[in-house]
Length: 505
Image (tube, rainbow, N blue to C red; front, side):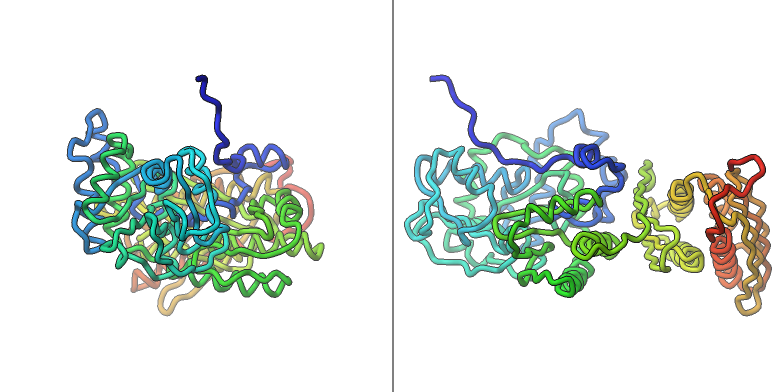
């Protein structure tokens, strides 16, 4: 009999497709529809892949034993209780075929992750409402898309507890393993590795053997396994995500939107006609997701969440949108950096690359320049901070160049003197379109002059800085503040002309 195509899981349109539809630059699109981390983990950089790339022509004949052992240690289990797969979705589909082929599947809550239904379809199973009568029961805990934390029922069928968002709730059901439950976990959410597609199942040794005996060999790539292993090496920190979740929930309520209490990294907002609001947000570049009875929004970082709130105000109350935030990233063999920049802004600045001193210096510059800047990433600090600092400043400079555009209407020139105790710095900036740096800093903390030279090259500005003092830290801080204050003057809008007799910079 010729097979027929089944109903398949529907992915939302790509960012490029959405951008083309609404007439925006793809970099202006912000996805609030994927429930993923706002940024990759600090471990996700080329160095983490170096060993795997060197052996990419080979199979991992240990079946990623090192990763499975790390997962087992993380949960205080034996390695024979861990099965590795291509995201938890691989196990959802596989478990439906193992335990419910031609049978019945129920979910708790009944309104839950749509992949359970597609897995049942692929297994020829029937979805029923009563978990007490089902061969296989999926418990989504916390639940997607509502964010609630359901109780785990006692059922006669095979129990599978999907804990994709468990880190955000601070709970787990690992105590159910001894009684025959299967727990699913993923690296896609709290660990920030959605693109790597790595998940795992936890069960007693007998059930794990049943699962792995039915898996395709090595369904996870060696590169993805390397990223997952690197992510496990550092405790996952979701504190900022939880704070932002609570803040965003409060802010939404001030707009008349009342989200359910969430135990996840997203909020579900009950409403009539959610599709209408989702469509109205798209022209602003905010991508959310409609469900029957409500809209779901992912919690991102402060800048992104503020952007969503601004777009909602524009749609609901016809409020003006603030200037757009420019988004840019720079990836090299040594560094992985992402930047969001708004010029002018309100001095909301966050810089985190691991190069602590120069992170602080760039924060000073952007704050005194009146910008909104969020620059995050990692570099090869094992070899020193040279590459990280250089690329941080080059990334900021390139983002600034793009934000300035044709530089029309800008004052163009700025000058500032800043003391820092015994140190004194003098900075003059020209948004000239030409990269010229004349830097004299005594004493130089180490990379002050080179940092400014790196900025000048990609920002296409002329920068003169002279500074002296006795304490190198004070000299450096005075320099970065002076450059920021000079730049604030140069960025002032004073008309619509390009401040050049040539007509362009």
